Amino acid sequence: MPNYRKALARAEPRGMRPLVAHYHLGLAKLYRRAGEREQSPERLTTATTMYREMDMRVWLDQAASEERELN
Image (cartoon, rainbow, N blue to C red; front, side):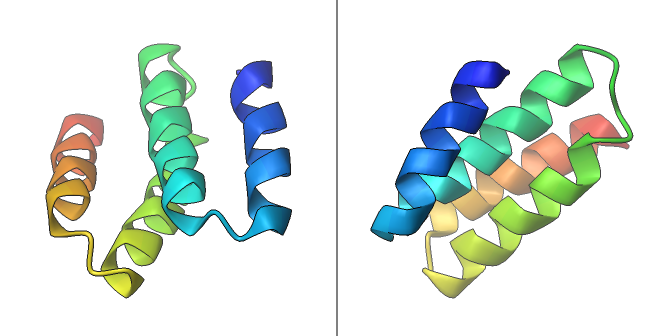
């Protein structure tokens, strides 16, 4: 997870919004799989919001799928 955090810290100030959204979705998946389910919803919400704002429908579907896995 440290690699995701480092990449996120580099992408955010550069305005790389699609990449930032992907990192949040990736972290949500990692937290769920690692058993840290309480961490996952916040990351998933961030990714979903960003995908919706950028009209990235395919990725929005991926985030919805992850949300179903979480519940």
